[in-house]
Length: 356
Ligand SMILES: Cc1ncc(COP(=O)(O)O)c(C=O)c1O
Figure 1 (cartoon, rainbow, N blue to C red):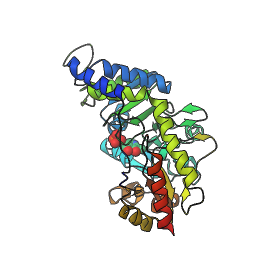
Figure 2: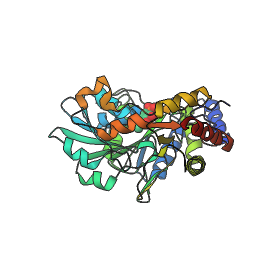
Figure 3: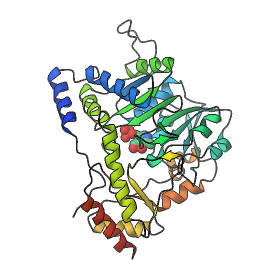
Figure 4: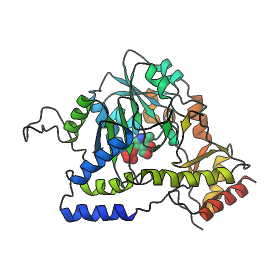
């Protein structure tokens, strides 16, 4: 059996919407589906404003640009995550500064954040890592702007409130490997009207609504197409179903892996996590990955700690023992919405053999 790391099956609503958008002729960055997606996303996350954009990386960049961050400014990001938060900070000319992740949940450690704050710190990008929400009460107490990156955590809850609603602005990715997808795609949410207006302005060439071809700020084109939004809307309308189908896969792995040689990722009692990619740890990781790959199973080692990337040495201002340790041991098992039970059982069976 060949088992991919993840795969996508879009439903009939997504297909119907996409054809409808194509038939309407509205296939670029304006159209009813873009408006409906933005409305649904804002309603879902209890936010006043949502802006649909090209992807989750651009979503982060848009928030930073709208806040006018640039050279001389520092933004604190977790030392372990996919690279986008650090890259977005760099791309606006500011400096990412790493804080370690907490041992108990692998999200950015508020204690460590305090150690790296300087007079240049302007914001924190808090990544809801691998489906686990950050400790928002403690982060918000620090009195620094928090930007929530919920790319990996659609549907996760912090204290009963859904991610996408914390901090000054929140971002999502809708990449094909995400719980909610539009192929490529992203969204930014905020309750702040000024910030929302500024982001819309920048995302649409810096052109005012009132006066065509008048550009008070340097903008770009970050707009999601109506066809992409049509697919995204179909997914957002199935949000609970898609989150719970992934949870089913996660529960099956939990049960089958209960007495197996790998350890699960930690989570806090205050968090309701979601199953993006099922993540486990082992000191034998590299040997296990080789064995699983030779059995046709696409498992992957988690990202390198960002503090280990040569390009980001300037951002590593202290030791990052937790990020380095997790990065050395953690790996992903195949996970997708609707993954058949026999595929999960096959992965676990081969994993047990690989551990022996
Ligand atoms: C935490 C995080 N932020 C941002 C992104 C970027 O999203 P995109 O691939 O849509 O640019 C990702 C992608 O995986 C991510 O994991």
